[in-house]
Length: 181
Image (cartoon, rainbow, N blue to C red; front, side, top):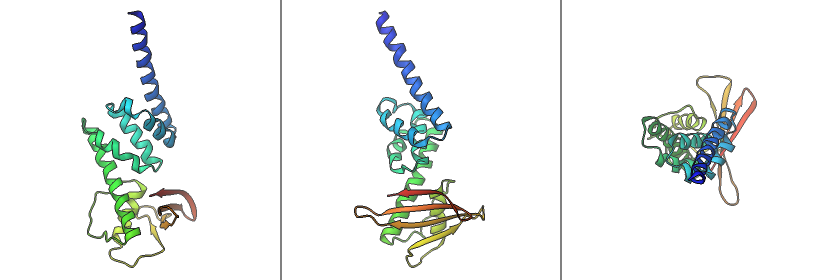
């Protein structure tokens, strides 16, 4: 009986430590680590919506947007979880549509999707505002809320798969390069 109690306590402490570790990493903006740890422990904690949301936000902020598909389906039991699921769904849809438009010439001006504060969502909105246009090698957009912030959108062709790249600039200094496929 004592051994069973020790095993249960140890498992609960281990579970708490993983979740606490994930939260600490998230607070320290170690998003890629959060995504990796969440991904590796997902099966064990898939019913814990706080864990799944934390994992999903880590993946979002490290630009692993395709890893959001499973958390989107799992986040459904609380109001906050459903809101997170909807947020992730919008960004994933915008990524897929923007990629489709750049690679295949698909027309996006017919779409009106919710907007978010995420970089991909901002660039999607700016691209849609162009309306019908001839394809370009790259697109330059100025942020409507900050005149010093701008974005460069383009496709990088690879032998296996083309990648959609968004470069984020402050004045002329590159802040971050986001790569999606």
